[in-house]
Amino acid sequence: MTTAASPNDAAGDGTPSTGPAPRRSAGRRRRTRWILLFALAVVLVVGGLAAWLGSRVLTVQSDLTAAQTAVNDVRKGADPRTGLRVVADRSASAVDASSGMLWAAAENMPVIGTNLRAARIASQAMHQLSAGLAIPALAALDAPGSEPTLRRLMPLTQRASTAITMLTAQLRQVRTSPDLLPQVRAGVDQLGDVLDAADPVLQILPGMLGNNGPRNYLLAAQTNAEVLALGGSVASQSLIRFADGNATIVKQADSNDYRNGVAVKSDIDQSALDLYNDYLITHLNTSVGRPDFPTAAKTIRAFWNRDIDPDPVDGVISVDPLALAHVMRATGPVKVDGHTIGSDNAVSFLLSRAYQLYEPDRADEIFKQVAMSVMDKLVSGKFDPAKLASAISDGIASGSIMFWSADPAIQEKVADTAIAGILPTTNDETTTIGVFYRDASLGSKIDYYLRSKVNTTTRCEADGTRSFTVSTTVWLDLTKAQSSKLPTYVVGGDWRTKVYRTQLFIYGPPGTTVTASQRPAKKSWNWRPVDSTDLGRPVPSFMTVQDLGAKKVTVSVTFTGPAGKYGPVKVRTTPIAHPTDVVIGKECAAR
Image (cartoon, rainbow, N blue to C red):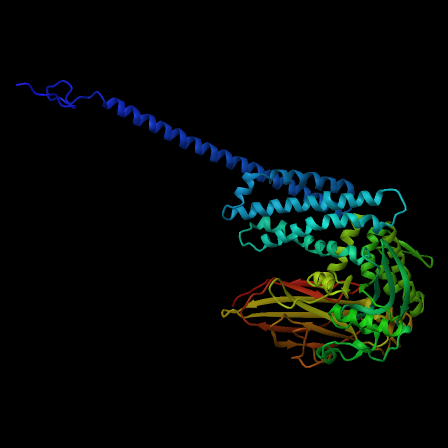
């Protein structure tokens, strides 16, 4: 009997065949090799992409660091043209390194993507600020011709404005991310502050300077020798007309030209009148007594329109000798009445020496002439642009340069910037504490010698409440022997019997209340009830007495607020001849 062979029994003897097996084993081996090769390729590609991305990141980091170093060098006095060219070249390299589809894809990665996006935006912003704005502006200023400086600059600012507005919004958004690495955040915050300051200026500058029709601005000159919250007595005013790139002085006045003692029409808050009295609206000189520049600007405009010129005023600009000293770093010195006044002696001359050489009215006239001479240099283009940018920035940061616009659209754009002179209404971004001074010595120019120091400490409780303690010290750095050599109107009478007083107004954070206060009983007293409020803040106030000879008076107040969001503590103070020494203690010492 014949038996048919099984497909698996090639020999027909029941022994399983091994023929096909090697073919299957080879196939499996080939598939395994392909998988391994594919995996190796993926590893190589991913590794290559990671290496590529890493090299690009290092390039961007190196370029931005070099660019920032060049910016710092320019601020310290290095040649701006050379420095800006370095910034432009290195930021262009950073822009190139952070462009392309692969970088864009990497920006979608968790955590690291946010940092890559921040680096790209920062690179573009630095390039736009340097190559798109600063360098062309320098070239325009250097170009020969008689065309007014402002007219030459207007087209440049208009072209750069759109790109800078877009980059400002993008950087502002990325700054809110909690994923930013500390070293990235530090650079982004620094650049973001620059963009936040530049963006609204570039948007509104052409219109402000008469590109769409004439604009009239009051320039109010404050003198810090008679200290008030925003600086000092409003000594003189000049109406400046900007039209088609030109600036001309239309009219001038000083405090003697006004009907002082008669209140102007005002919508000022009753809380301000209760805290400071009606001198805010009855005397031009003291209109800057409340630490809110819109209040002061509207009052100054009201005085001007009532007593000097009824024509519309488009805004108010305020400067003081400290601001002029900053700006003269860029313009160089000016000569007035045989005196050379520059950045190194403007404050001491205008707030001290001038009052020793001239009668008060003539000293104020000298101040006005210095301010106008500086403005003439600015309008005619006789300044160092790079130095001017940092000078104005310093003046704004210290509160010596402020601006208010009668145009609601323009005012809205500047309201959140330092130049507006407005205290924040929340603690979200910063917990801002205000310490402001007002001279109460009656008829003196003694505040050139005023010195002050502010210390703050923060305490966090287990339930989330937070307390802020503010200690303020004031004194006169003047001896009796020194005061005996000063003019009578500087010391305010007979120095042997004169009593010098300074009022302190301490504005606590919004939403807090006063929970403690300390003061020396013999040299101070409460000026208003300790629970007084103004501008949505608690405002304890004190009258202090300063004896000659650097005898110090210190008052201390604690403000306590409920659990909530509190940004970093910042302190704003009155800009005085010798800036207040501010020490912000450890942000939070939990019990």
